[in-house]
Image 1 (spheres, rainbow, N blue to C red):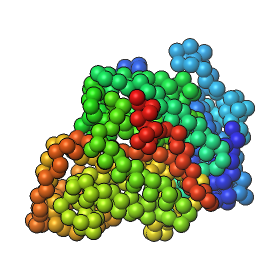
Image 2: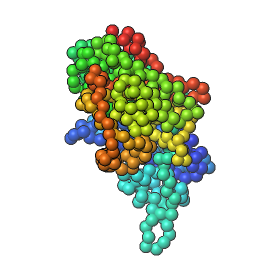
Image 3: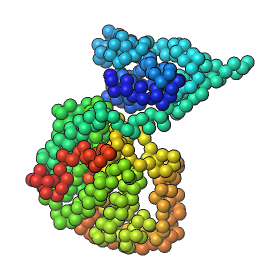
Image 4: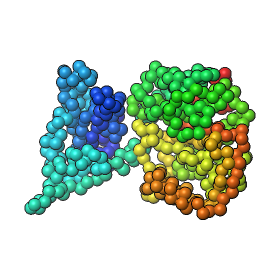
Length: 473
């Protein structure tokens, strides 16, 4: 388990002296005694690679060196007959590099002894496990000596920012895991393109694609697959996947495999009958152009904000050219008219989580990309069929402030406030070209930033007009 040991060594260098408290994921039941498939908490995996539910970890750091202590489920012949083999404390020591390992139930009694005398504690105190376990045991392990008081003199440090920064830069082994996840994902998308035909249902295409994922070694899906045909492609997180395909329409598939806990994230859009119509090709070409601009900008000279700005500019020009907006490029951007058709970001970090840890800012400024960062690039144009005429507000808007408010207030409250602010603004009505209604296109790849040119891990999934039509025909 060299990867997690490397990660513990890295966090030890950041901490110097102290202790890290971590809690693994638990079994979640769907109904009665039927459980959902277990997936370990990503941070817990990052620092331990322990694969089983119901586990705690304490990492003691002294003089920049880390020692791992695990609390895990014990061996139990009867339970293992029902639920599968357990590694137990011995397996934790022999296979996962634990200095010492104990039973899961011993955490509350033994943790105070391990933490005795350590005053710098790193934990996720927004996690329910902090309230359930750590708050009390820290008071016991590192008490504040004042009569009648029950609180600790320990300094509590938030673990999440520290781990997020470490997880943001992928090391060679992590990149290999991501590459394998991407290779599997590419083959699944190619299978979907090859087998899609007239009168199939979305779920049939989904099943064939996911079979390819699993045949090639995927452990699970990176996220629920989106297989959206026809108008459904204009629903960003559509995952019902129950409708019959539109034989003359497009199908948008956003799906990915996970390998060794690392997830790909790929979207392709292609014609069900194997041939783009003229208007489908027009829109597709514009999205592809914007994506190529975004990919070229994944360099150490750019920020995620720069990348989004460049793709918004490209998409806005495309919207003008396609007759989808009432004014010029400058107004389309400043008044956020593009948001009617491109309402999400251009990309996000990728790694153990499909929307991976790490911020896009550093010291309150957009951070420059660094080698080892991995991001998706995924522009789109979605021309909703239920909006044949759109009333565009003639009001300049700041996308940064809108994002910040949505983050702080939540989407529901923030969008209501936006509606209130815009209701009295002047507006202009614009009819959408009828033959464009219902077209939804997104193209997404997974890109590694390097010292030189960006590396596209999913370039093998066809996306030029010629390549897509060739594999679909």
